Image (cartoon, rainbow, N blue to C red; front, side, top):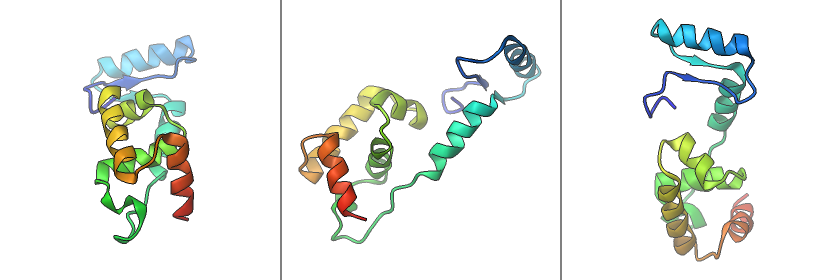
Length: 119
């Protein structure tokens, strides 16, 4: 949201008073995010994909590709990953295609099995 220039973010299930507080805060020039949105973002930020030694399967991946693998392992869709990273879902799809090619896997399920072998 912030990368795209947004000043506020609410959950779809927000109440009318929350919406009013958000609009007033943004109008004052403040940033606004509901507790639910902040909690979700913080949870996503805790998830990382370690960069291992060169003999590990992820070694041939770029930093961005390793990051996307981490989001995929959490079950996120291309659209959700794109929102978190501030890129389009088509860009995520291109990264996913490159990841599958580099790791010689046929899709997310196989990628999950390969990633499980790393631990």
